[in-house]
Length: 147
Image (cartoon, rainbow, N blue to C red; front, side):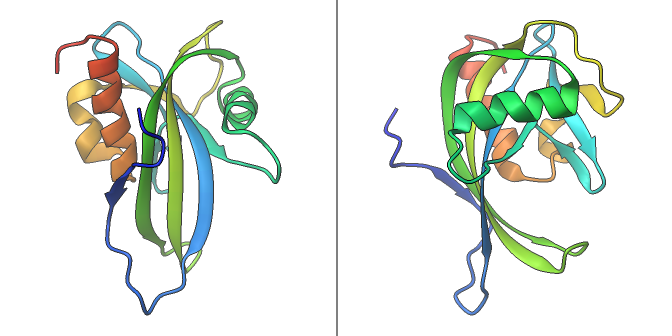
């Protein structure tokens, strides 16, 4: 995969200043019919989150999974990159969410009340960021799963 290319969702409006938020996220399948998702205040997201200063995407992903899911993961492959241009009413801020997505597996059962297993056919409706649904679809292809 060419890392210089990425998918873009939403519209970047030239008159708006965006807060840039790089992040790393994991697509984790359960039994081939569901994907791990974290329930947040504003909707569902893939497990993962923002990069701290100087942190690699992989290190950030391992840290975020431990924080959000109370377990660890094994990263098997990179899926790709996607950017979402979104507005957060809660923060009254426009964001440029730059995500890098990985195919991964839990190494032990997760222990989080906010983690849910979502049916694969629901992700385009329930994920707050379109890039997360895009990553799930591409991960299915990479894993050789039917869509």
